[in-house]
Image (cartoon, rainbow, N blue to C red):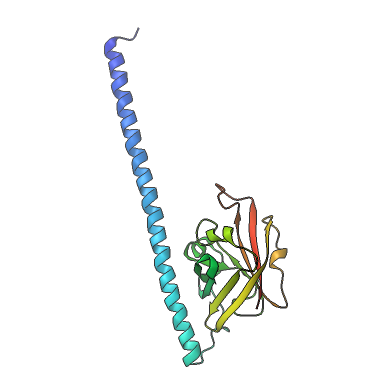
Length: 203
């Protein structure tokens, strides 16, 4: 039979356990918030640095006639800037789609045409960061790609939702085109089951 003293001891230990649990969860939550905040600050700072790099590339191309298109791009290299004026979207385009690359900007999909060159340019981005605004894109919206070689204009001609394994959307094009890819649905929690694809033709 449990005595009153033992019951009081259980109650005290229970309250202490709950107190330490609350403290632990608070610390974990605070650390998670700090991590997200630092990641966002770093990404924003990188975007500014990437814009400065692009301006330097443009200056080198225009004034010193240094061709940058022939260089082999490595993962994370700055390739240009993607803009969708109606959505107010402006983001650095980097080479590759590694996790760190997509934290800092949107990534050029290997095997597709490079920004500023003929063909179908494939660009991927996260639905919860740089490509969040794609949920509001419409047919005939203008997409722009600024590279050291110049400014290219495209107009959206179709939007599709496809399976992750559907690579036909990135098929080679003889004309000038760009294909934007992100996960779908936009507000899905976890690994999204589909892909949201925006295709635009060069003007």
